[in-house]
Length: 292
Ligand code: NAD
Image 1: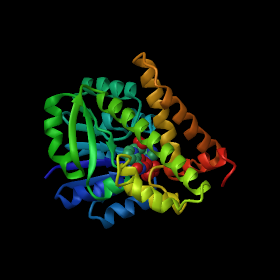
Image 2: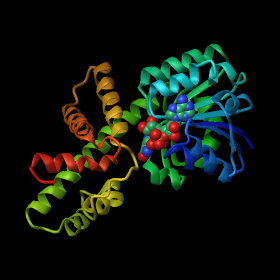
Image 3: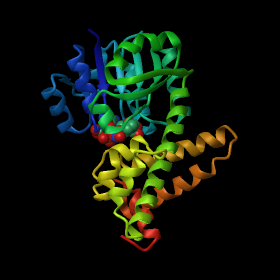
Image 4: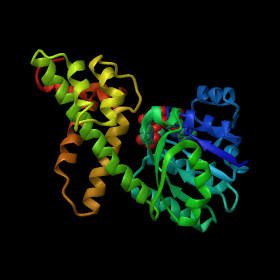
């Protein structure tokens, strides 16, 4: 049994923490939203009153927070992980953040004798609930081996992809593929409907051919029905497209389609859809054709 300090019990963190409890680990969790702590207690975890309390007795600390400012304040703050976790603690940041933040955290933690992995995930809310996430891990191989039994509780595909921050680069690549797929499924729906073809029937055929994808499998019905409850918020995907474009600049490469998708996601946000699921990209595609 491992004692896990779990910070960030939102859409993803809440079911992930529950899986760790069910696997027999002691989970001490903290979130700024009190209802998340109640949910953790109902799942058999121990709510903490602060980050410091959650991490003080932990062997492993997991962070699952929105973006790099949240992760940095939880790691570097006076109340935070570096000030309050014991030496040798393994900090696994599973949030999606910019690679340079992951590097800075790993460097600062090393000076404190705290080991760090960046381990962002893919698979969405369904993947978190079903313990079926894909987890892309950056950091030292020995730390990956130490973290593997914990990560195996949360995911089905758990891969060490390289040194510190490599996990975040793989996640950026993941997000541009996901964004692009949503954009094209949205265009398919608009084309089918505008041509008088039943979109559900059309997409059912696509899902059985070369155009098949997890997104078509999981989301085609809710998109056709215009159900956009998150899931994964447009605001978070907007953050991720910014990370992808910054990573492209850093690597000196040109990703023109990624640039276009980033603008479509930005449009969705500017239209006021930031708190809807990213499948609401369909609303932008509809507006471009004067529909919706
Ligand atoms: P969320 O907003 O539902 O959850 C984040 C949680 O962090 C919230 O409960 C919030 O209250 C808490 N929080 C914020 N600041 C805090 C602080 N200082 N201390 C303690 N708690 C704090 O977001 P989510 O959808 O669970 O996503 C979390 C991360 O996972 C993001 O980086 C996101 O990009 C990534 N991700 C999400 C999905 C998805 O489908 N939702 C899929 C893959 C990756």
